[in-house]
Image 1 (cartoon, one colour):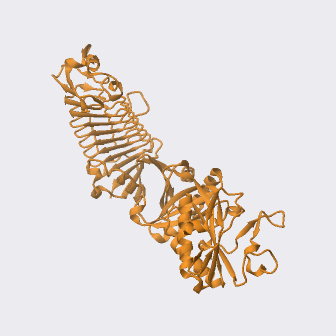
Image 2 (cartoon, rainbow over the protein chains, first blue to last red):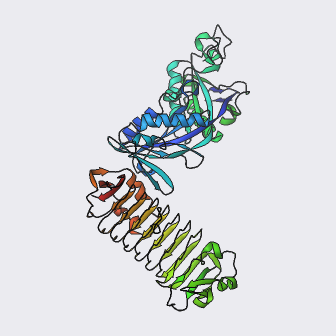
Image 3 (tube, each protein chain N blue to C red):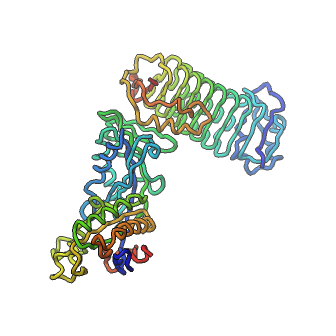
Length: 298
Length: 270
């Protein structure tokens, strides 16, 4: 398959089941909601070393938030429910509770309930106040700037992590420009995050390493500087490869995000140095979710 | 199916215990069986059809017409369904109700919503003393649900209240929120003396400055984030509380009762 001069490889992205949750952070203005959200989703690019993958889903205007203030919706993905709950609580405690004017609300009403402010309330040292409003429990925790308001729990649901595609370009600036265009479109899709810095990862990994201590190492088949010294997947004109990783609530959400992202890359086309779109997989043996690029773009 | 309707034929001299006439008791009964139920009336027992004309068949929707202030225990321990009372109700309206909805067009007597557990009670007129309170000697009053009173309430509203919300459009008598363990009472009108007397936790949300007991301490003026959420939850009510113009988030906060645990608060609109 070729779109606008860009070859879409006959391959698939391989993704895994994960657990996910969503939280809504509000603040006095969008600036402070975003600061808090960025802190909460920081150092959360890959479960390999961060314990979770997290990202900002979208900015919410005042009419979309529970307390009528500007807000940001964030999502956190982890391999298991216990790890997810731990990450959520730690991050909420250190990044939202501490952030001026912030408040924290559940972003998923159903699912398994996991603590949001339920345990953060103990920071209140006995001065905390519970309020049950319309069946939802909120905690009012006295803090130095007033009160930190947090919903007691949020929902944990089954989700999928590791959807991806690779952008193969003739130069590094061209690869990055294409990925930026893709991310801009993909951020309009609900229920997905792209957890890497700016949504883009330049250090795609393979499973395993020559070093026993490491369980992942550089994806040498897609490293352009190794074309002459490893079993490469790159043709001679490819000078840079970048990857976009997608975590989402459902298979459909990820497929939709991949479609708009790949389309944005292809819209730049071969004239802008984009030569191929490929994807990362493990031969289909590890992850139950397969996103076939040509089917998605059909 | 039309609502199961009980129309009072005459006003008995003695009080009537209406507790058998609740939705979950009547749902599997035919009209003749309902007519044959007995109600305690003073020291006598009366058949339902001696007191009421019965019509309709949907026991999940009960209407009591020509009701007056001697019909006690209407909606006792109600579990689902709705009861509409046209007229006044006696004491213990919605006593221990667990779910469902009761609406009354007139006034309610003593101990309305006493030890209520959940559900919704709407009183278009006034309510007597001990609204949402505990029975004498008991430690837990209302434990959940919502009460809306469009008129005024008597003394000791929310006495020993544990959870839930009481909304009062009119005035509240003395000792409003006394001995509260938790929960929320909102009063648009005036409050009487000894407001929040011996309250442990909980919130009294007042539109007008009360005459505060000495055992409440001023914590200053604040903009509280939970108030917009609380007011938003009133949106669907048929009430002045649903009016966006009634909402506020700037309050003077008083903490107390310091003669008790002191974790309660009186929030007064600024």
